[in-house]
Image 1 (spheres, one colour):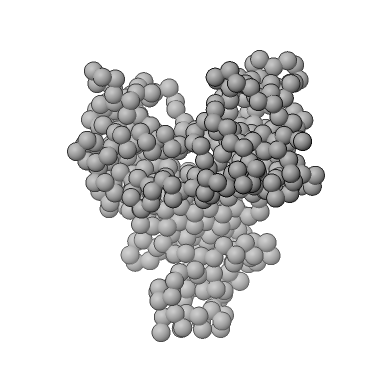
Image 2 (tube, rainbow, N blue to C red):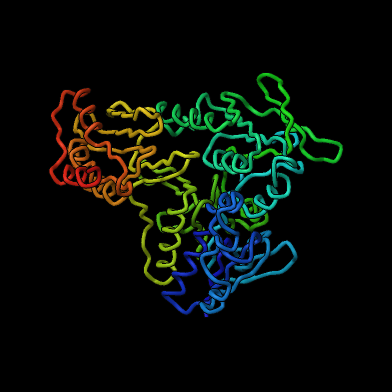
Length: 456
């Protein structure tokens, strides 16, 4: 019986295993050094915040794996011998495979900062990070202050987590405005205000120089590079992005015979079919790097839904239906304290030469939309929503059909996903667009009817 071994029990690896089982009777083994069972990584923050227990983050009961004949092996893979199709573990165990799927996800970035491995310094990506945070920051008596280094999505989640336990937070962000490499300046400025309004000590345009230790080898303070200021703290969160967790693959390559090493760049290099350069070896999820980017997408995408899609795709290929990975139109969502964020299509931090933008912001300063379109053809390119929920199905359809900005605005109320009795802002948005662009776009009757019903 063909043996499929999957390294990694995150969303990518588990999805691959589930779909291979649906399609075949192959022997399946999932290997993980992190946890015994699959859990929802994005839910870790809600465990710390008291909204759920860790066991609630596990989508499947413990009996699920045996019932579905998916073997689980706890262990750390040290090297991969592709010539003999054998995994070597840190405890000297070995495991042979017929086909191998690498789905090892990401690890927090470290940049060689002095003190980055001290006790009390952690990322917020793995279950072990959550355990470390519970140990060092159970409350504001044990942890008088935390410092977070890095202004991405994980950083702001960690800030919200600590804030929920009334722990003072200093947030060091290298950029001049929060996440402004991704968000246009208007959205970035809105999030700066939201962070500050929650009592976070936000420091923009600064870098970490070092983390200092106390006499017991625990973090006691950080030093800011630009000013030399020393900030006393009990916890340091390193959230300056993530990178593919593939050190063991690179180590394997240094020991391999010519032609037997798995090709890597920042991640494990794969083609459109998620195949590596070695026959019967695949890579999916955060650790996979496309040889050729797909459209405007990045070669590596640390997003849960693309990992799930890769798992489904590779399962088809392994079970005899070789199909290419097609992620579709870009979308993503996040939460910045009390402001929800969605993006569909592309709204770059700065517009390209052929693009035109339209920005609307509510008087509250906590809601906005930012539309991007081709200034010549008027084809809709993308939208950012902050504080207003929009329907994925609507924007996926208009992007596929290459609809114009006029069409999107005419049907904007159909896209709104906010619950009943939420105030809708489409008339105000369309009126502002018309005023700024000397147009006469009108909401379609269906949209007007919906607005009337929900606001009457």
